Length: 446
Ligand code: FCB
Image 1 (tube, rainbow, N blue to C red):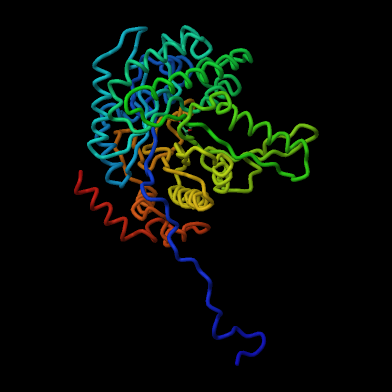
Image 2 (tube, rainbow, N blue to C red; image 1 turned 30 degrees about the vertical axis):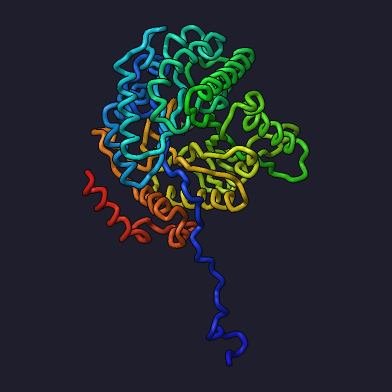
């Protein structure tokens, strides 16, 4: 009989959930990239041109990851990591370097790239526009120019019949809102300028481009599902009873998360969600402001982006409706790979929770397969499951890539992995055996 004050001999049995957090059958597991960020030498694009004059040498895309030549190696790696889907983009400026002039060799190149992905049995999600424009389009005013909708449609109608048989899901546009934000508000991307009118025109032209490309893609035989990849943020007020903070949340949510969909209603077969940001508003005087990164109470990425897994649950449940959802991007810039492990597990746990709550989520594409060129920030942010040594372009699989593989193989999050959350457990401690097995499998395939 334990005396009062002493530790009882027998503890009540701990209640512990050992069940795997399962994902639905046929769930797509993959990673995402975009052409300009990985291919290298996109010399006919507006970005390339801008980098030469506006950016220091180390922040120019240059050869990037040279995926243009090394794509087979990269797709083999993704396959060996058990990915069953891949999201990538094609580069308009390579295919149509001058107005009306299509480069057949580049078209052939992309056919080869996509054929290779299909030969490895990947489900292919293809983005038609991921931020870069041919220089000739930009010189005519880019997306501010109404005619760009027509130019884009001409490009799409030329390339799509050549590649449609290798594509399973289409993304017309990547993050129209981020493009407008970076160009007109933050002004750290090409064509940076302050112009409310330019901003509105760009928004309307992007919306019209999406709608028209959607109609075209749905009209071709065996048309595949079409959507956009939208940057969706989780907004929150710091004080429940602050009216101004609530208004800030409502307005930002409307503008960033819903407006593009409202203007393109009926032209989406699925919702593509890129999730990176949690924003808290705090009133200082009358105007609520975002809580600065330095005041954040959560862990953050190397870019200072708050790590807030609950946010992805919020946006998924908020956007749940008639359309299926794909998480078209979600990832972390970190040179601390254990942080990426915890990121993956905790975010995917929230995705599993959203599925359990009834949200129709069909796939997850981690950003990114490789470290790559992060736009105006250059090569410093490290988003990759695979690390790139830029001195020789060698690829090195990070342990977090194997954590992701473990999840994919279980089509769920095994209980052993949940140990990562909230602890500073090293990947190898948990995965040592598994890690060696996978490494061996990859070694054999090389
Ligand atoms: C997204 C972009 C993608 C990449 C990630 C980090 O907004 O779509 O190209 O830069 O952020």
